Length: 103
Image (tube, rainbow, N blue to C red; front, top):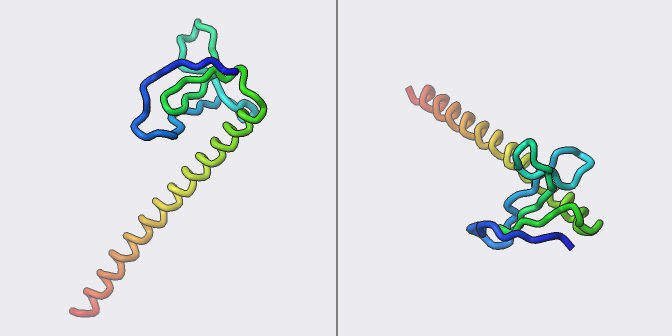
């Protein structure tokens, strides 16, 4: 079982606060430690830090699924931002077109 270390609890329960990855093949990556210190992979969930060196295969799969879901959410948020920008530009252009027609 992974070691647990208490850290500050996030504002919202059940929120993954940090999953760090340094390579595609790795489920988790090194923590932010000084360069000379031995690096230990970690996962932080609900403000609790877990040592990721001893994760079960099921836990590694869950972390990989979470990373995929987070990447998809980010991509969709970016796509939404593009669509909102386009929407704003179309509305602005339509207003200008309608204003020109009134004159």
